[in-house]
Structure formats: C-alpha cells, structure tokens
Length: 172
Ligand code: TMP
View 1 (tube, rainbow, N blue to C red):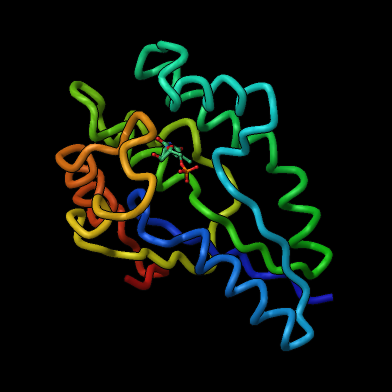
View 2: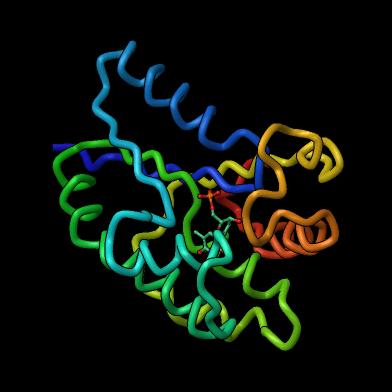
C-alpha cells in the first residue's frame, strides 16, 4: 500500500489555514482519496488543555516550558500519525513544528536552534504550504486579538522567522 502524504499548512494567525485545510480535505475526498485532518495545538489532551489556558491568558508559564509543551503536544500524536500514513491516509496538518519554532523564537532570549531541538525526529512533511498574508490584513480579520500572540509587531517577527525556516519542500 502506498504511504499517505504528510501535508502541513503554516502561517501567522488569521491567515486562513483552517479554511484551506478543510478545502483540501474536501478536494481529496472528491477525488476518492483518504485524508485526515490534524491540528496543532491539539487542545483536548492534557498538554493541550494547559496550552489552551496559556493562550487564553488564564495561565502563566515560562517561555521554555510552554515551548516544550507545544512540542510534547505533537509527540503525543506521533504514533497515530505514523499509523495513518502507513495505512495510506493523507494527513493534512494545520500547524506543525515550524509554528513551534517561529512563535517561540519571536520571544526575547529564545534562540531558533534551541527551539528546533525538541521536535527533531517527528515525521517530516512531504509538503509545507506557507500562507503568507500582510500582517495588517490578518489583524483586520474577525476575532484577531483574542489570544496571547495576536499582536501586530509580534506577528511580524513570527512571519520573518517562518521565512527563515523555509526549506526545499515549502511552497509560499
Ligand atoms: P491556533 O490559533 O492555530 O489554534 O494556534 C494557537 C496559537 O499557538 C497560535 O498563536 C500559534 C501558537 N503556536 C505556538 O506558539 N507554538 C506551536 O507549536 C503551535 C502549534 C502554535
């Protein structure tokens, strides 16, 4: 059986990743393909609940601790991802380790190389689609500002970080 493809959509907040992920799932289904949607952070697990409280400003955590939690949140799904890929299911993933690095490294004193460490060894995407949008346009979208990282200047640094992480398997 052919292994499924691992396709990741990345980008800053409110660029439309979730909408495009759903469209991709529908498109694959229309062509009789099998696909499954994953989203990180996965907020329902134990790590996900802590992350959710942190993002909604109900909980304070140190930058390194929250970085490791985001990574652990991905590792919790590793076995399931491998099984699905092996069974021929295409995985469409709404944010992955690139978000982990781009956001954490936008913080004072957080180094890109240190941030990469915890995610080393996770399944490598076949394709990363980076949705690029002017941070001013993103900031004008409904709901912007509700969560911890939704500030214009911060998002600009995150965007610059994403572009530093770009590899051959990326499409912008
Ligand atoms: P979401 O809005 O796509 O659910 O993402 C939640 C926020 O968490 C978003 O501002 C990006 C941020 N984030 C990180 O800081 N590190 C990560 O590893 C991930 C996946 C998201």
